[in-house]
Length: 109
Image (cartoon, rainbow, N blue to C red; front, top):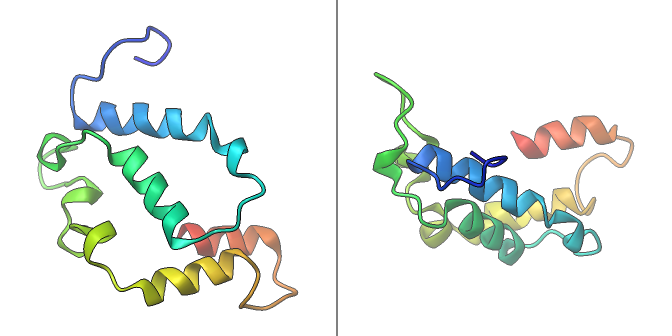
């Protein structure tokens, strides 16, 4: 789809396309600190135009956007957990001797 510059056919393909486009500009943010507004910006870019109901992956499996705990995350969440995640990403909290790979895996999780 990306190599052929074809329009996405469903929500899953749109997520892939949006993620690819967002990651192609990530170097522009290299000097920026992690912040709730930066995370919100990437969340909006990746989910732009995605109907959560259109990204079923198969019987019994659901796209992460449809899971109840994540529904409306960018609009309804408390800022405290996100602020703490950003502080961890910015090395403001956590073990200063922690290996960067471990920190990256924790952030991803």
